[in-house]
Image (tube, rainbow, N blue to C red; front, side, top):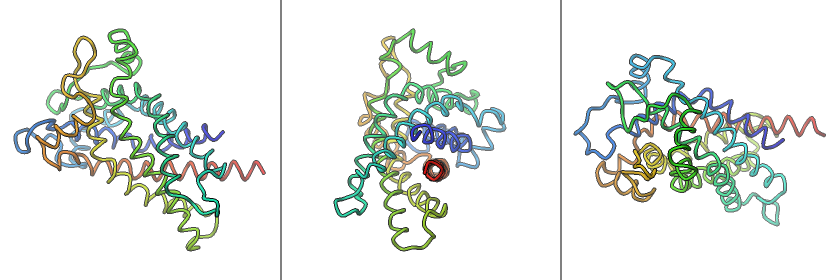
Length: 300
């Protein structure tokens, strides 16, 4: 039940935040491996990107990749939050004295995140391809021109096999390890601290909401460079053997981006990342916490 509630909570958040994921993906691919000022900026900021995509690609384009995004969120967060919830319920995240352990929380979050992300990697790759697809006048990054999720998975599988479907999976793991451990550690720590301070009544929904807001800020700052590199790894063109033509791995992607685009290149789309990850973190953790509270209250 913990896995099901976790997956549903993440899907609920995804429906609202997917347009921001589309904007974030486009902004991260804009000016890929080009020095600042040497390329046309189709998307000047988050709000301009929304308007541009809606005007040129149509409003429906703001929900591109929604199907794989929902499946990925259910798989990834069902496993991640479900496993973390079981560890928390089993008392593994607390010291012998009964206090919350940030180190154990971060380790559990990282391990739970790795399992979910690796299994959902092919879906995440296709989601990135679909969200990057745009009309030629505002296109950024490599354009795969898939017709849909199932067609894309079938095409990649037939052409490159299982190796092709899991291309970039290992490179995407540092992003998830950092993001997941930061998110769950800061959420649990903030919630524990707020409970000790007795700012809100016990079991209040406000407690989960404020803790999730703190977690959202921490996640965006920690994960942004790895998120940019991961998007580019998944979206790069490949040769006949399915090997990436631009980057050898996550470290190479980070180094090439820093060398050609500077430190700010590694934080491209951070505004969209915050507007996407902030609400997504808040909504998914809030839904997760409330669903668990409801389930365990009724189960007693």
